[in-house]
Length: 108
Image 1 (cartoon, one colour):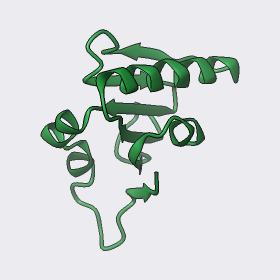
Image 2 (image 1 turned 90 degrees about the vertical axis):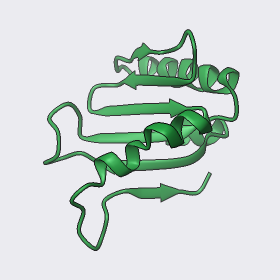
Image 3 (image 1 turned 90 degrees about the horizontal axis):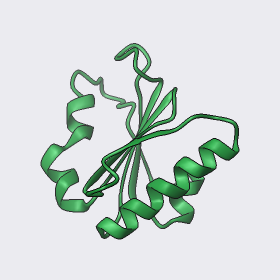
């Protein structure tokens, strides 16, 4: 989260996946203003994960409209704004939420 905030990611959202999926414990969704910013954020974040001793696999870096970073227990989706609104992952993962949603929005 700090890495994305430092790189001026916008509209950062975290979603707890425990009990919803076995692929990860948390999902982070954020956006950049351009493909260049999305690609830069993804590369820096993956490098920071590796420096901390973790593994990070990246997909979608070539186009940088939607970049997925698999960091093990955390999956990070970085989007351009138009692509994020089209796929609307927050809504997909919030299906069945109670009155107190697990999705939390962080101020960017």
